Amino acid sequence: MKKILFLLFLVEGVTFGNPKVYNDIFEGQKVALKEAKLMLYIISSSKCQHCHNLLNGINNTPHLLKLLKDDFVFIVTDLENPYSRIPNDIVFNGKTPTTYILTPTGNLIGIPIEGSIKSQDLYTLLKGLENYKKERLGF
Image 1 (cartoon, rainbow, N blue to C red):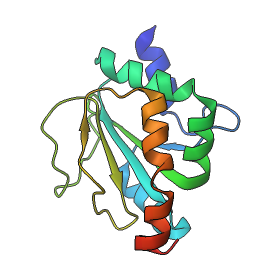
Image 2 (cartoon, rainbow, N blue to C red):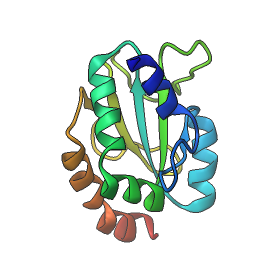
Image 3 (cartoon, one colour):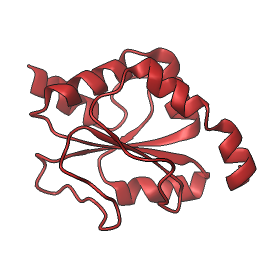
């Protein structure tokens, strides 16, 4: 059952009003460049309980979903998918979930978050990037 819920979360446009979830970072980056949005990129595994907790927490936090829909391109890569690709310039140490915040050009902002993060903490972190986007990225 958990795997089914996890896979449903990965399907693009799962529920009304939620952000579109891309499962390919290269597709997501095209949208980020076009729309001048930061990317929230999560490397996960459908076999990982911490990944389920993180993604379910995101999916059950309406204000975080709204922020992701309005201001970010949301990308989730499932390592169990044989077609998943992780860019060569992304440092991934094999721990799932690992969360990255990236500029539209693919530059890492801060450091990757290895392990699960509470959805409210993720919201606070992402909301705090508003000034960074305006001052450093100009959008």
